[in-house]
Length: 227
Image 1: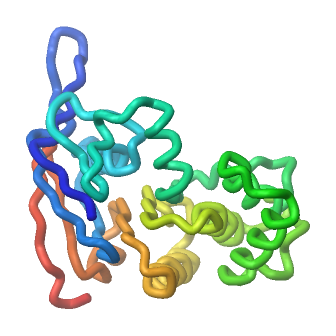
Image 2 (image 1 turned 90 degrees about the horizontal axis):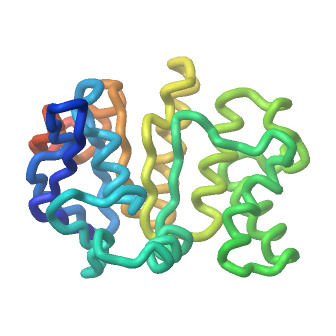
């Protein structure tokens, strides 16, 4: 479970001080699914970075299973990210010279998984996202939607507890957007993930059971009766 208390992230812009997050309190239960929506610059990605331990708050606590990520050493925080948190981004962040299978395997190297087991797990998770016949293809030989599926497989291959997605459909057309969202929703249920997604897309936000709207660093939470 995530529990955020009084989370503030303050930046300096010249002589001015800007609060990207302003005293955020938030609980996300294990296995929960939350979409974060708001205007550009409102703090969406900053909040996701806090959840993923990619940034530290100026004030407040970010607890995952009772451990405050903000106070961990960099080494321990890196270990938590490697073991427990999967990330999917708008830009697929694939290594262009590696095959789909090799790209997925990279997530297992820091965990000390042996080569044969890495290959087996990468092939298995690529099949689960519909790319079982694309293992040896390079990113440049795949469509945008297929590349995002590889990125999703890379996030899931380490069997994380949490999946964080930052605008994962931002580079895709509408039909491919719907395919990727349906895939993510299916994987959330199948793997019992705690799943948090940032989006500017209201069509995606309406599908989530719980919506966090963030404006000027302030968060409002609402249950989505239409989801």
